[in-house]
Image (cartoon, rainbow, N blue to C red; front, side, top):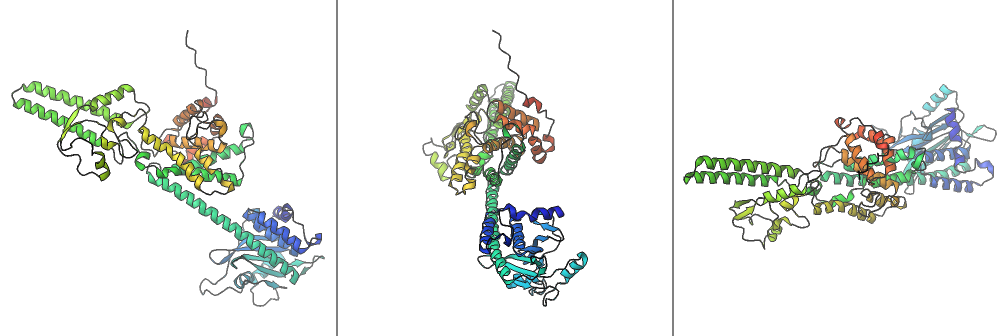
Length: 591
């Protein structure tokens, strides 16, 4: 406790404010200097502490308390100091104040609490100056007297000043105890001193109120940012945590870089505002996805749109098999050899089953589909089935318009798989053959462009937002998470030396979250070792920054993230040393 009071008693010096009125500075000059210090302070605890310590310094008070009004009409103890007893609680001391808030009104009757001197000053919004608490009438000082009996202290003079903002709303109460003269004797607070403290209280109220407004604006902005991120995640039941997990990993990487004492990150530091800037950028890094259709974001198979059209294709195979059965029965009925016709039918069924299995497997998508397999899809697609009903009926006017130039649709032969006019609706090509021949993954070129375009829209949307000066780099940080250090990323093809560390950190966070996510419909969740191996290859291919990759491993950030967000079955054994050593040179081909 003694150490705490020694630290806080010197707080005034840290703000370059004269220590007491005896320095020769006028009261007005002193107030101006204090006002400048109050307006410059952004930390809430230091601000409230400065207010109380300066008031005690000006008046020579031995003790004091700063109360702040709560939403429940009570005065909460925020700072408490008593120099002679070496009591220092609240503020930057970290010592909690054990006393309950002082209620301004009786909880049962609703009557104002004028028994308590600080509450009375708050309710009346007028200063209260008491020369001697033991002789004062109208106030209940029983708690004060009990404190004095237990400590041997003598609480005498009290000065309670309400803190009021520009709208005359109560912010709190400043209470000072036991003013002392030059000889160290406890005296009453003079009228001149009271007026000076009233002026200080007015400045303090404005400073606290401004800080509360700034905090409220920040809280509002944070909530709006998270609402937008949640809205993006809510569009897709499969990516519901992406916009929440990427910020966590990004900030984790930034903290590890700040903690580095040597190497390339030894001088990397972010101040409070820069950390908040990164926080905002990370939460908004995918805001452009609000424009991306769900059936593109969630496309789990090649034929999936709002539903998986593989069911339609399977039904056509069913039709072909029934047609084969009908042909067999008709042939037998005409007198052909039954054994031969049944053999043909059985062979055709086996062929259709094998073709259906191949098409169904191709619909899943994967790392690579060879040209041979694509050609096989096209060959299977050429088979014909007969449609008896008009395919122009029951369509929306937009889809019907696409069929205006199509041949008569009442009935006719159709391919098993086809790219039809109605498949080229709006900006997406839903052609069945085209989509079944996607070489990698489940997205065709149109859909991939739409997905990639979300980052362009993210940048455009963020640039439209009037960010204050300390958040000006939000668009840059958020818009750089798909760039690659070799300059082959998008949308601006930036090289590593053109990108900031926060942007690179967000890039690694976005990739690692995607690799380890267990909520994607188009892929199974990868294990920790699989994800790190892929990230290592991306480092070798100069897609992610090598120094950040090493920091990610050496700092243990990968494991901290895994323990927090991965399923237990994903966290397998990993030897990071194999990724930290330079890759062995490839053997030269024999001449």
